[in-house]
Length: 461
Image (cartoon, rainbow, N blue to C red; front, side):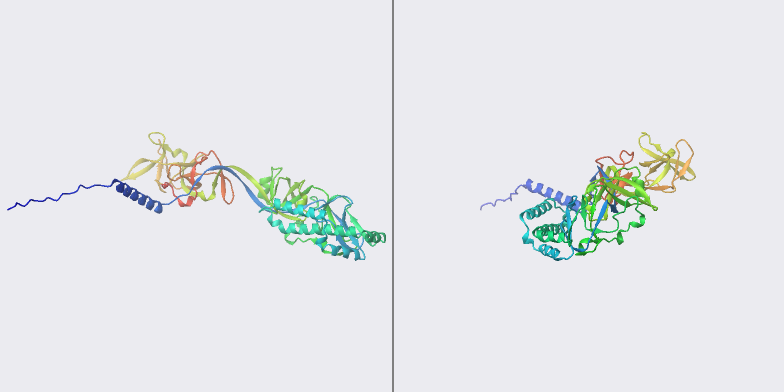
């Protein structure tokens, strides 16, 4: 009989796939990191930079110019041959008066037919349009309707002049019969077609009661198709020297008292100028008088103008206002500050009383600000009512007085540390800080962009 053999099952050795293990470890690490990232508080960081800001104030000013009103010396229908803002030379034709009205009617009809423009006039209009397009920007696009009116006036001016030339025989006869008159400019000047009662006002004759932009109105002279003897036809501004009178408050007057020039930005077109300035009191109201010697023509149609006046230019460390917080500190006399065994860590000697016996304990603290007599220290390890003792003396001081400091959270070391700041100037978005302060910030420090989202000592991920 055949003896049965015992069969032992062979166990295969365990083979570990290193690749799978490595992948699993990486996957676990990634999941933990992702979970930590999603659940952690994320603090936006801002790097402190140098910068400057100017406090900008918006004002309304009254424009005063050398203006001469030209009046009609006869009655009749009127036609204009120059547009507002153009400069007329002495004896240049500005308008005509027709007592009977027949020639004026023909000229007016010709002004409605743009097909009769000659090549020279068309070329001039095309150049005006091309110049406007080349200079057009977001800041000047609002002027498109003003530009349209200017082109309309330029077209009408060209058509009127062409019509007038074609009617030479009739106009000569009418002039001879004293029923038609050419009104030429008596002197050089920029032409405007409105009156408002301010033409003869100067900085010497101005009164505070005259400044009233809310009720201001002007008389448009071109609205009249017919004029009577002695009626205003147009006016001439004869000098590039002009002024803007701006009522200001006492604070603004104080800021500008030592200035000779000031930078202004006209809200009408965004342009900037630096006129000379002086201040004058009119009936108890301080006025800033801005003197210009160019660009008068840009505002020939305006009496009141809005402008921004930049003052209080300050340079220093520039930080966003969102980073600024307030924190409360204990205020202690300087004589109560001491140092630890290594003479490097500042602190105070806190008095502890137990079972009728007193002892002192050194409590380290950071210094956040100082005056001539006091230090500002943190509240972390101290409480109101705690008693501290002067080193080498029995004099004691009870912690009660507190004060608030403005500052930001410095996160250079990976955790939040309050730093006191000294604000020189600020606007709606940024503040300018004094540099070189003992307990403040330095250039390129990293701070929390939103100071209210972090607290002292908090770790930054």
